[in-house]
Length: 102
Ligand SMILES: [Zn+2]
Image (cartoon, rainbow, N blue to C red):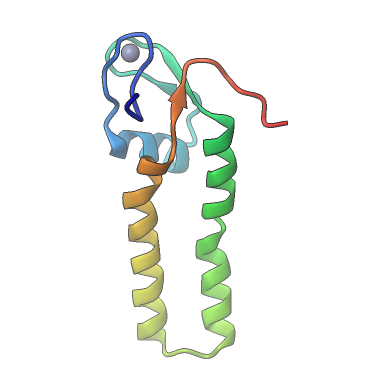
């Protein structure tokens, strides 16, 4: 079973749209662009996102405290943010039923 696939229309959701909707627009659930079906992250995916997203501010604070040069700090934050952007949608799975976290 492929990830990022709408269970009702069987269409694939663009990875970027998943990222954009959840992290930038904070729109949830994700609406399938093909059939309008509402999609949710699986409980496991949600937990993963809670673990991954704080990495950026934590890393920023650590590097700042370690007194690394501004250029290095900028490049590191940029690289980590970019990797999250690229890999996050590969790690999450969508479902059309909202799953309880607990
Ligand atoms: Zn659909």
